[in-house]
Image (tube, rainbow, N blue to C red; front, side, top):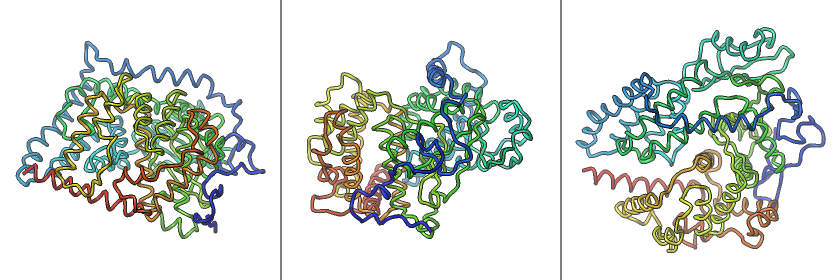
Amino acid sequence: MPVAPDPTSAYPRPEWTGPQEPPGEGPADLAFGAFSGSGPWVLDPSALTWTTGIDELRARVAAQVPPLLRKRSVPPVPRLLRTGAELGSAIGAWRLLDLPSSRRRGDPAISRAGVSRRLRKGFERLGPTYIKLGQIISSGEGLFPVELVAEMRLLRDQVPPEPFEEVRRVVESDLGRPLSDLFSSFEREPLAAASIAQVHSATLATGEQVVVKVQRPQVADLVRRDLAAMSWIAPALIGRIPVAALANPPALVELFAETILEELDFRLEASNMLDVARVLASSGQRSVVVPRPHPHLVTRRVLVMERLEGFSFDDVEGMRRAGIDTEAVVRALIISFLEGATLHGVFHGDLHGGNLFVQADGRVALLDYGITGRLDEPRRLAFLRMLMGGSLNDPRMQLAALRDLGALPPDTDLEAVIVDLGLDQPTDDPTAMDPEQLMREVREVTKRLLAYGARFPKVLMLFVKDMLFVDGALATLAPDVDLFAEITRIATYFTLRHGQQIAGEIGIDPRDNPVDLEGVRAAIGVSSDVDRLTYRELQARRELIRRRMGEHRQRAHR
């Protein structure tokens, strides 16, 4: 029975922080990728024919976004009418039924829940593209209202699968051979069915246990028609939906288009798997593993890969019974995620519980690489400066980095932003504010940021979304971890392992600039005499803030 090392022992401890050197024995591909120790095949990067021209393919996919979103002289009438009818009826029913009820009862939550429920049902009727949009929203807790997130979560596991004959037709068409020639068994019922594809368990004719990801027929054409229709409808929705995160629907559609088009070619996903595996291995990170894509059975619509198994990410009791240190699991996930983003410019862009297993030895099996964050060198360095600015509580460094990432216009007066947002002033404890003060602060900050032209670039959205998942993972797997000690521990790890590289790249040596815990305390509004704060205690503070803001909304509604 595996037992993770004691996380309270002296730091650093590579075996519990996650990074480990590749084992002396094992498949040869462990030298370049963080894969399982006994895979069904060994990957030779030079022999993977489906990687030929992958960079050009990625560039061609990205180049499709502007033409799809450009307003045409003739709109896509059939799909536009269907989309407009579904979303229009959803909003109309909300205005006629939910909004008046909300006003009568003096409870704005009724209004938010009503519009969220009706939008979710409209997305279901509109099909795969809108279901995918709902699934992305469902993992954005903190970015979107809780009512909308809760409704859209219902789209994660309520997608009916394609008939098996359709699956067979796609596999045989793309791989060019009868199913029985390629597989000795192929489960007719999928392991999972999502909006773009579904996954089946199978055994290759050569005996290897695999999973096969199969794209839904016609989904690529439907996605393109839907994006064209969305680009027509989105401007008309500005200011008409009472959901803060949807205040700029055209920007959301653009982000969505950039994301979903990448998912329509499984050769890009398989390439993402290799890139993330390389990043993990080059960082010495061996507590997160990537399934091996098949050396040959990868096409635009079919992806055969190694099958990995383990505990579901929310099976905390099962993991603990197996002797797995769940705090170490979260820590390894955080470290690998931050290393990928800041030091290599590549990170998994869609972390959620359905994309992760925890294996019996405590390692995290990371799945589903359709969405991957990629940073060119200037933006990667900006990302690194942004996180270093947070560690040092330096708002100027953070704002300059956000500007360089595209979140603020290039000519933004950063000193004016600092003054306008009060970043040069002591931070007030939000739990000590009354509801009116809290709401006034939120409105003012939002209004001022929008006035400066703030926006949400795709890579920043993916990073924030992943961090929100990590936040939830802490709540599930490590609610009693001391956040101050954990921040110090992870900062120390980066200092010892990557300090020289960080100093050389951005001119700030973390070895001479330790993490500013006073700034951390100020950011979350606790006094300097608080030397320990668990995640459970932080959640209680957040709940108090949410309750006070809800009280204000109810009073204002009345």
